[in-house]
Image (cartoon, rainbow, N blue to C red; front, top):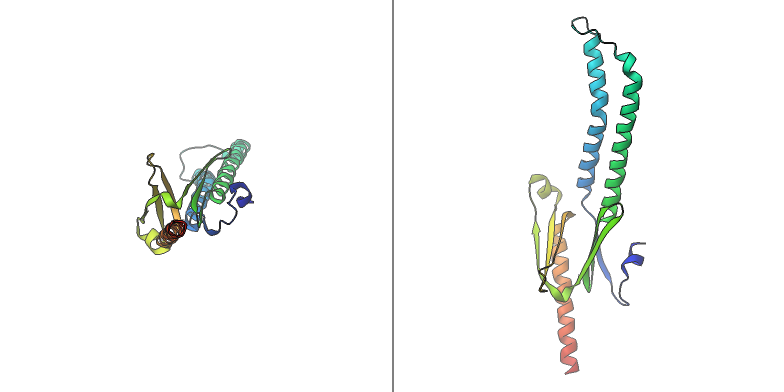
Length: 189
């Protein structure tokens, strides 16, 4: 499905397809889960405090249970939609490295997507950045590819797995592409 939308050239080979690191989706899912249960925990703690004999307040929370159920259900629905949006974004954000170009697909919302690509001949530099102890141990980071075009266009993506290997693969593909082109020019001359 993905490659039907990208339109690869006739003999272009996909070298690697890279999604964001699994740790990012796990941490975001965990934060959504925590956000979803906070009102429920607060309700239970408040109920326990009000039922204790030392409580100076005489509020009967059971009369507000219907309101709480309604608003908590709406809160859970909001968190569920946030989770669905996050999973969609995770699966649709992708870098495709081929033997001729780099294709970056950035899903920026449910109905907005930015697709960019550049040929490896225009590759000027590939930088990686790994920040923090967790990123170092799990081997994920930021990869930034800069082109030699006059527009100073950059392709940057965060939380990509194994950025060192990805950089090496991109540079190797670019070198092979340049060598093939120089060999073709020497043969035609």
